[in-house]
Image (tube, rainbow, N blue to C red):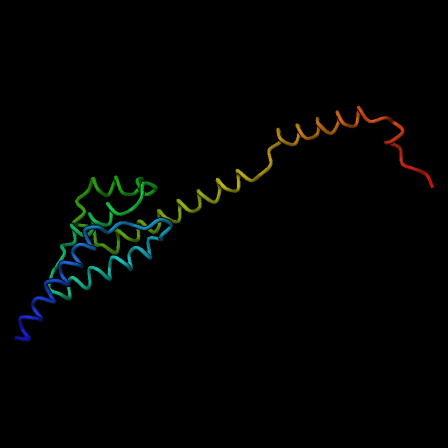
Length: 144
């Protein structure tokens, strides 16, 4: 009787893990490393429950799971036979691309917050207009 319950539990566990695996995608603002940890946990639990996922299928899942920011790496990899690439090499390539994407985001933010010359010229023109409208007597330093 215990064997039947164990089998039923194991089937339920496999079913739930399979659903997690099929629905797996990278979360918003999640790093590739964190995504890899979550995916490895699911895959290892599936393998522990005697369900093996072939390398090609796992690699396809990884490539499908990442966001569009990684298209520079994903598209060329998909053109090759993904079952021939070791999963850890694939993840390493995605981590390298992630650092490039993050560096580009940082540069864009820095550029956006940097004041432009045109803005400074406008501000200067505005100050000159105010100064020209102000009577000369109020511009001179007051003597004590």
